[in-house]
Image (cartoon, rainbow, N blue to C red):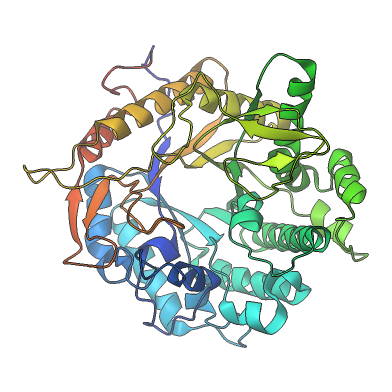
Length: 471
């Protein structure tokens, strides 16, 4: 069953993001981002983005390790504040542009396909301070100009582009809004979301105009739900959970308009964002070429009574009165961080997205975060990661072979240990261990984990050698 499942040109890869891996926070003319500021709020206890894994200085060493691993693709982000340190300058930062040219040179030298995300949480802090960030349409124009610069500078060597990473999660987790009134706060949140939709659509249209051979799309956090029981109310609750926190985003991107279920929900609560006359045309003109998605876990959803407390922001415990709330799934085990492990749900996710949109799919993140360290023999033994990835790749193989789903690439999160957006270096995802702890950077030595050598065999065999095969 393993033979010939994955296309010969399948892009076996791994991912990182700029603010989580680069460091060099004050070098090369880089500005301060919102992500930098947020990471510093925990810097007394956790590593922040100042040094991270120091990819900024060690990119040649790290890309050589990517080549040793056999990566066919590397999905990474360009740090907005390296290109436009403040976000609204008249001219881009030449040092930042030169850095990414060097990274692309090195990837090209090793025949590793770049998959580039334009915006992965690192909004310039100046745009937040001066204009309210994504609250203002001014930020849309700044983003589009930044995208134009990236397409101009790097478009000859990048054929896969992504607009915004995890917009549906970012507006909940990475957009602190200082507004005590729930209704006003959520209205601001959905206005921010609308402006990001417009920015993404304009970037897609611009890419199609400037780089007609390139492919571009969004990449979102896919957090699907099962009905907690077969009670009809719970079935509807799981559909509401998927619509209101997942599919609304991809529906707007793919179909170019707000779906009626989402308009009705926003209107019901007084959260409908302000539209300008040209917005409908902008959304309709920004259709993606593919859908990228990050998959880690699934949920169980049950109907939530109208009088239940609301929690619109939680990752693990959403509660939307009158619609749904998340509950534990007794059929799944969870990581130490409470994330339910569900390889079969990965196949279901591929099915659902393909059936709904009929666009090629790209897995932009998939992995397991754990606490880990170097053993007495000098190695990192991460059998749990091998088991997690093997089972997910098996289900992806079934989706390709049995369901006929076109999958472009599989990019595990992460190539190397990075600063987690909330847990510093305590939560590690990489194939390569970075020898540092939260507050002591030590020498930042790179140590390939057991999963590195396992994934090396997977890539070498084009997915035929998974240790246990496709079960």
